[in-house]
Image (cartoon, rainbow, N blue to C red):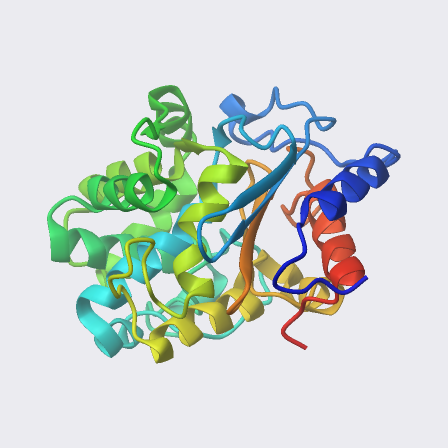
Length: 309
């Protein structure tokens, strides 16, 4: 089946949900963040948002969950909109090949993280955004509320506290980069903003809508421009090559779309010029990506023929 501009995505989603229901191995929830450990791997939701804001969904597509690293897409876009190419002097655009919380590359690369989606890179981006706005997490929340059309989006204080209590490695990353001058503000302030950012709760519908600016080549839901077409291309490219931790090559092979995952079980994906997707299921594989989520996106691109390749 190949979709066209007049074809509803609903039958595709219904078919995918039926297939996902047959999955026997759905992975395990993230256990190093206690607030996420109780997640149920059988939970599943998926939403597709078209460029005009029409949304299709299946399963738990309106159920809010902890977005975790998915928010890194939005802080990257806001920071890039605020300071342009200057941002890339502080964070790279290459896959890391290492776990998302690794410290090993920072020393021999002089405190410059490989990309914006590993934890070190996301800390740098949050620091840059906080420097630009004075309120990185508040700017993120305002943007997501506007783009999703959901004024009730909020942060989960319990999740933020849980991450802070188990955030020694992130603190180490931030202090190490600060020693190289690549963190501009106080590390405790940065960590507070970062943990708060990752604790945002949203649904598949919210995130599919909020990611729409990347399918619209930088245009926000109200028609105003957040990013240039070139900048939107840059964000999509980094999502494709770096958005699913050290499984980005396999994700590109299976799914063929720019995507960003989070250890809460969500994955967002972009079909430039056509639609955006979000899928959620808390069970993760060994690399931190949702087992059911990646499978569902694989099936979506196979069934519809929608891919960047």
